[in-house]
Image 1 (cartoon, rainbow, N blue to C red):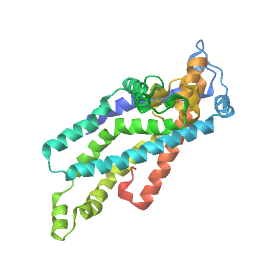
Image 2 (image 1 turned 135 degrees about the vertical axis):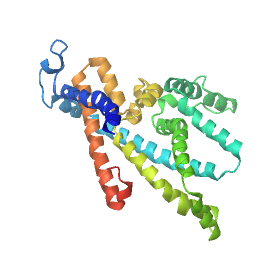
Image 3 (image 1 turned 90 degrees about the vertical axis):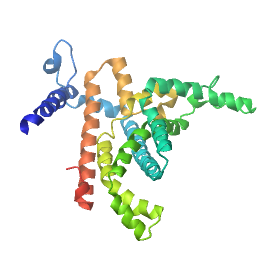
Length: 291
């Protein structure tokens, strides 16, 4: 048994634990000549730089805010769609609907950026062309920061909700039919069966996915934000997250120490958060806790 899990242990040891030595970068002023352990030690200077930049609080709030919206809306809508599909009797309609909802997951973020630009471009975008055809004034999406809060959330849900729905649908198919038969005999209607059987049975899956998501709540959807927003400084106030800020800083200064400090800040914050949430869940229901 131990030999069977040895490849997995080696995989995580090599790819997850050994690279953690690189955390030391966060406390150095990296020098290519000196390497990791030959670079000057600067203590907490990189973290002070992040704080003094005046952007850390704004970036943290943006990152957490977007990820909370992503986690809550994605899971709620995915559960709703999975429940609806599970109650549909038409076999072919169910399969086609699943495929249509799952297809956006395979769309690359680069292609998503092209779709977004062709939809919302001020001069030739589909939306503004449609507005002009009705003799209405075009709307400048790329100069309006607040609208991107909804657009980014909308694009994320469009791309990810199908994948989450499949997970919940798989959990629903694993529920014993005897529960539903007993409920029908007792006179429960479809809404009562969903509320008292399906939803409670999905809670372990929901909590597990929630904990996994919370662990990376400080890791923003970099591809989504960078591809859709790019270097449009007018939108940074409402769309800039830690990952995009660090990436731009790294391109300009190539300060590996500062980038590593930001990554360590994200990881520690996420670790504390997932341990805290898991503790609360364990207090409520020990069976739902991750550890």
